[in-house]
Amino acid sequence: MILLRGGTVVELEPAQVEIADLRIDPSLGRIVARGTLEPAADDEVIDLAGKLVMPGLVCGDHPLTRALHQLSTGPRPDDYLQAVEHRARFDAALDGESLEVAAAMAALDALCAGTTTLIGRHASPSAVEGSLGRIARALTTVGVRGALSYSVSDRYGPEVRERALAETVTFAKAARGRIRGRVGADASYALSSEALAGLARAVAETGAGLTLELAEDPVDARLSQERHGAAPVDRFLEAGLLTPKTLVAHAVHLSWPELSQVISTGAWIVHHARANMAWQVGYAPAGKFGARSLLGSSDPGADVFGEARIAALRATDAGQPIDILRALANGHRVASEIFDRPIGPLREGAAADLLVLDYRAPAPLTASSLAAHLVSALGARWVESVMVDGIWRLWRRTPLSVSAEALTRMSQELAPAVLARAAQR
Image 1 (cartoon, rainbow, N blue to C red):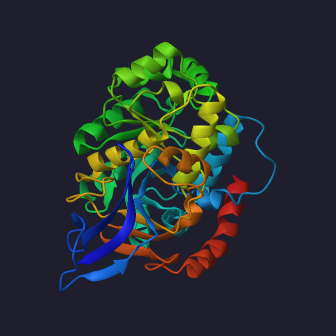
Image 2: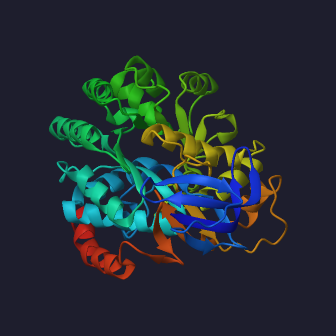
Image 3: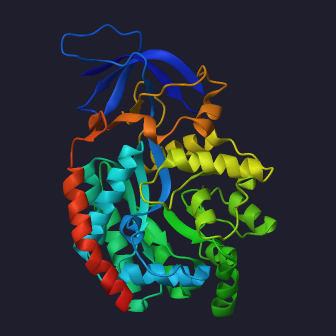
């Protein structure tokens, strides 16, 4: 057993801050006791007096190969569609090895930022078969949880689409433990009626939830109407793809009636505040997303602390403030559904996914001030140690399961070839 003594334990919703001990059973990956605890004979006692203990964070949507993609050089695309085409060329340049290394880099950066669960997706049309297994191996090596999907699309033709659907189903049926499978979908305009039907079959066959892109830019609605004769929300509704297990990424350009339709299905909405700004697609009306919204990250590293700060500040600037503690706690709710165990509450019976932060609070930290600390001061730079499923994966800022230096060298060696292939396309 591991006994964490004297830490200031933080929970998000309802907000709570108190000094408490936690006993962890690594064999179960669970918290087995909380309170004022006396050491048992077999306890490994770790003194956390003066340290903050809080739940590991969840990234509700993350492009797992962005760590390599961000190294692309050349002129910035002029508009959203060009940017998407640029990303598609990069995805097509990936092979199995570069895909695995990129995913490992993403997982390690996320771990160091305090993100313990990645709900991630990718597309690698030149390396479809086995791609999700490679990503799973990368995340398992680093030690984070992962709910993984392939972004099914018609961008690369029907043959690649069908192979992607087959990869999705095979992986989702086999994934267990800290890795689970999901179904992934591109934007509506890049999905034929056959693709939507295939996605519906994959969801039914696997029982897995779906992650889809929706209304990141007005081009989604325009091209969906031109190519398929219907608006994106209508197409997804007709295909039965908007359900309480669906994660809707972006949702920037929806009319109020369309947003109401999405919310009424019980689907979760994943807000990408920094990506909205980076690609100048506008600002999602996160204040209108309702009770079932959470945070995603398109930046390398899945720094959910950073996303929370930008999301809260941007929403306040727009005059539509959001409950940032609920958005973070909703990530735990989604993860709990996916992994079939309580994730988030630092309570008896919950998964032992937690962070130790050497946070030097500039003012008293209380339940009522917790949100203010998250927005103004508390962030990834304070993360000292990270436990996932009862196992230390980061200890005093040193990864325990992978060599950061070796991984960086591999990435630097592989990146030029990937970028060269992308440029040739």
